[in-house]
Every structure is written in C-alpha cells, then in structure tokens.
Length: 279
Image 1: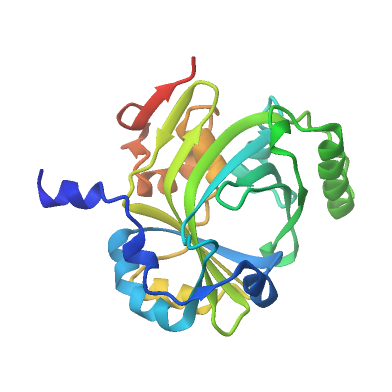
Image 2: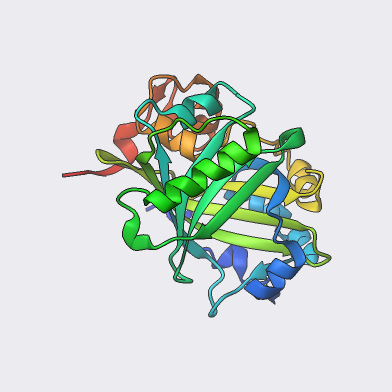
C-alpha cells in the first residue's frame, strides 16, 4: 500500500487532539455556551488543519470528558413528507428551521434541538432533554415544543407533519478560546444514512464550524491564512439529503458535496462510498 493510501485511511485523530490543554464541559459552558451566535462553516482537508494547528494550540483549549477528546454525535433529523425544511433551506428562505434529536453517545446525553434564524443570520438553538427510546417518531410533547419555538420566534403557523428523515453520525472535536467567547468544532468521519442507503465521506476531509459573536473570530483568521473560505451552503442535513438522493434539487449544495467528495463531476457519488442498504 502506498503512502497516499495510508494517509487517506488514517482514522486516528490523536494527531489533532493530543497537544491541547483540556477544558471540562462545565468550564466550556461558563466560557462559551453560545446558544446565540454567528456561525461560519468551512470544508477543509487534513493538510489545512495541520498547517493551522500550531496557531490553534496557542489560542484554544479542547473539551475533554472522561479522558475523551473526540466524541461521537448521532443525530436524527425530522422533516415532513415534502421535505419542507430541506427545500426552505435550499431556497434560502429567512424563516427556516431544523428539528433534530441529537445523542451525545459518549456522554450518555440526548436532546431535542430546534434551530431557527435570528437577526443578521444569527443561529438561535433551543433544546430540551429527550428520551432516546422515542427516536422512532417525535413524541406529542416534543412536537408541541418545536411548534412553540417556531411560532413564538416567527409569529407564523407551524404546519409540518414531522417524521424521521435522515440520520447523521460523526466524530466532533470542540475547541474553546482560552479567553472565552469563541468556539470551534471539527467534524470528521461523517456518515449519512436513511431507510435505504448509507454513505460515508472520506476520512481526510472535515467540516469545521466557528462560532463567535460577530463571526470574525481567531479561528476564522487562522483558516483564512491557509486560503480556506466560509462555505455558505454547508448544512449537514441538506448535504446528506442531497447526497443520498432523497430530494430532487440540490444544485446549491453541489460545491460543498464536491469538496466532501460526495459527487463525481455533476453526478452524486453514491456507489464508491455506499456501505450498505437498509433491509
């Protein structure tokens, strides 16, 4: 096996996580919980992360829980049969939403999360605890919570018949600015699945998200130094729906899917990365 294949198959993230000073979840929340923030998303490869790693080590600590620094996130997204949440995002509507149940597998936590848009493109996330045993469908209480958040935020009726649409799993590393007020997440080993298919992105590409009050934090500057630019259409939910062929229009997400190597030319690259089909 040549060195390039060895490089691309490297699944060990210790090269990225090992040298940071640790921070606890309690310290993270006190420094930068950031339920309201401006997010910038980037798609980068390992080379770019290696280039900026020395600068990040000076400015950020890493979330550590029970000696773990990379955490498995397993998220189920809910949408209606018309894929309204997807198409509203695809069309760039200002009053979009996402409803999901996220399991923090390593920490044994599970939350219902409802995301809506605030002023100046700011993301507003609302959440409450959720029983993972109820993943097959939203409970009536969970639906009422999502409806209340949406209606209260937009003053608009919530007319969506929500049901499971997509599952996404990945490993996340969370960095927190030593001075507080800024976070950075690095997501790798991305896997998308629905009732019919499962699809994995290559292990040497990552989705990086910066979170700061103004959207111009230290992490953004470091990424720009290696010529990384924010990727406007980088919703994991929308990318997964498009890459698995669950929707009929995906042109706005094509550049991001190319960067994640989920497409070949102008076609979805399902065959090389499909691991299995649902029975």
